[in-house]
Image (cartoon, rainbow, N blue to C red; front, side, top):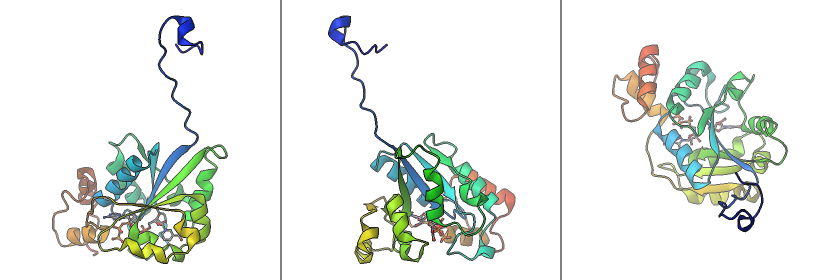
Length: 223
Ligand SMILES: Nc1ncnc2c1ncn2[C@@H]1O[C@H](COP(=O)(O)OP(=O)(O)OP(=O)(O)O)[C@@H](O)[C@H]1O
Ligand SMILES: O=C(O)c1ccc[n+]([C@@H]2O[C@H](COP(=O)([O-])O)[C@@H](O)[C@H]2O)c1
């Protein structure tokens, strides 16, 4: 037991007391996840390691602001697939925050709400997005406030040029942490198309997600 008494007085060497971590570092991986795939999972895991995060919270959107609501799979199915994909990862969890909130799922509202889950100034948020999403951030609700509430981890994604981030306003750029990850040219669109065409999605999504899609008959009739 560490009594706080120095090792010399106790006659043996105490292990060094690790310095207190000032603030918890929480990754937030937001997405429509229709369905979740290895591109999402790799982005979250790479951010977890690169920024020494304590955990990553996956937040499936309720109503994705920039996607046509009637073409998106039900929030409950997307939530279930996100859970299945992350169950084997002890530092990941999935939040129902956005799927239980009414109206469009805006990141600023999520960050404002999540701040109140923790004591004031005890947490730092790392919102994890693909480069494609970060380059669109000026079309989000209150992008400058978003940039003030979190670090924006911009992970590389095939087909998007990181130099384009230089065109964003300084207030947003300040919040961005670019992160190069192994490029995976996987998108949910392509997975949906493959299922519709009866092609394999093995090795693009975790097996339990592929099984869920099959069992529920998702994407069979829509590209
Ligand atoms: N292959 C990938 N590599 C890196 N980031 C990705 C990848 N796929 C998606 N992301 C990022 O994950 C987040 C959630 O993405 P989303 O759920 O919209 O998936 P998507 O594959 O882009 O979907 P869709 O094809 O339906 O538009 C976004 O920030 C997106 O940029
Ligand atoms: O806040 C906004 O207005 C906003 C607009 C577009 C996208 N986002 C968020 O960006 C994340 C990726 O979105 P998407 O549509 O690529 O799945 C997801 O968490 C969305 O809620 C947020």
